Length: 347
Ligand code: SAM
Image (cartoon, rainbow, N blue to C red):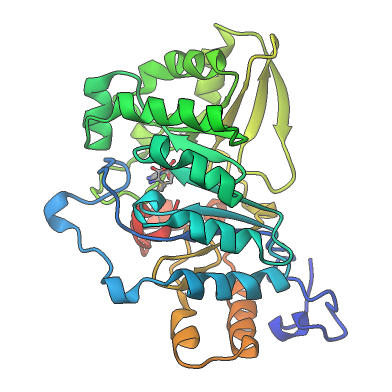
């Protein structure tokens, strides 16, 4: 664990490497950039009811130039990997221009994206040409009626075409994210796995987190990772690969080599001790943790003539205060100050 003050990160004696370290000594290496809070889906574990949504005003949303400027400063502080998300990132017009801009930033090694897949068939090729590495598509059901119920839009065939297109144009890795919710799709785990195995792509099941807009989260709706493994091992021989350093998912390989299974278990087995992720919201707030309620405004600095030093100082202080993590938070028992809904944070 490192001691010292946050500003010792800026090249002074104690932490002369200039990296983004927090109080616990974790180093931030990955950035999720949300480019919009808007979404054309209304997934019930994410968005509020339609009449309760208030989108961020357009003028509060960062422009591509503003995002690139902030990512540039973050890259100079050691951020190496960027994932573009939202809301639905592909609702942002000409997103490939942002992808291309970010890939050119010194120090950035990869740019990936998480999407609901609606616009993927149309955009996959341009995104790959712009330098996007891989894409993670959210897919919570393979039954049209259920997909529509969970995602709020009758879009299953179109999303599946998007996944095929992403594979065709050579985006790599192509992954699937599924939020498992008891009583909604937990009987489809093996079907979703079979779909992914047929394409030799990896599928990851995410435990339902209390970041939904409908307030439907409770522990009974969480399908713990262990339960998923028990179900899957009854059907397929698996080999545990474990969780790589600072990765979100524990990985299991199918013994026959067809794809892999990942479990993202923030609820049952939090993985905060080596977390290396920070987030930039669409309205320019830096979040050091998904569950953080302390929002650090970078847009204000960027729009008011702030310098690189000004941005650096705010970023360094924000990351220094990164919370210990969801596993240490008392709120599950005692009540808590809920941050924004997932669509406004950027998943
Ligand atoms: N619109 C894109 C999509 O659907 O993938 C990107 C944004 S979405 C917020 C990013 C990821 O967060 C998705 O895989 C989604 O399923 C997941 N997600 C949203 N709300 C969640 C929740 N309450 N618990 C767990 N995962 C959630």
